[in-house]
Amino acid sequence: MRTSPRTDSHRSGRAPNPHARKSDDPVRGRPEPMAARTAVVERKTAETEIRVAINLDCQPGSGNKQEISVSTGIGFLDHMFHALAKHSGMSLQLTCKGDLHIDDHHSAEDSAIALGAAFKEALGEVRGIRRYGTGFAPLDEALSRAVIDICSRPYCVTDLGLKREKIGDLSTEMIPHIFYSFAIASGVTLHVDVLRGENDHHRAESAFKALALAIRQAIERTGGNDVPSTKGVL
Image: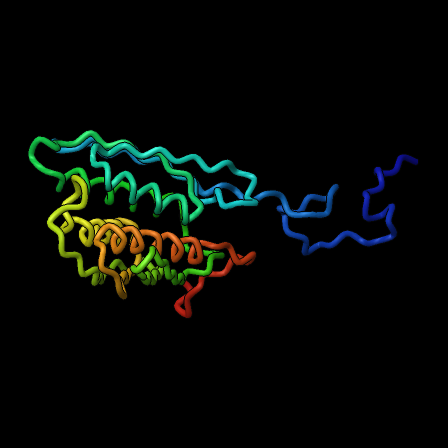
């Protein structure tokens, strides 16, 4: 009489676990790698043409190489988006061709919208993550705090206290608008406050770095698959 091949669990004297997760590797006895959270967004208007590619899972130890390339035509904005990607642990390729002969408004705003849309798409359903994140980031005399809630209720409050008209080629009035545009497009509640600081470059950069740290905490996987809300849906 022919018999079926014995499984590894039979050979070891253990009965198969009927409740084992489908992602469990039966040979190595460990979960398969989680699917990478990635997205590509292209946004074209009469004012800007933008492409964003994002991978949320490039923190040290993730096994994914972090790659960052940002070109918006606005040097200080490139610097801020690069810092945001670096310290949040994401890979980011962002290009923007905009009507800079007019001013920096459309390029800065639309880049933030596209980045927020890519973040939302890459994250997918809000399930199995921490949801809330808080980040504090100092830069010399400046100190900023950012708090984020990935909740599908877009809202943004900022208090940056910037005094200069521009930092490089980026109008300082656009910096809170960048945070606002990202929050609305990504569907998050976001609070960013510069707590102290004298140098506007330091104040702005510490704000972006604080947001990066908050994002990194909020998107961290918990190992479960629950929706982090008493409502059961976000």
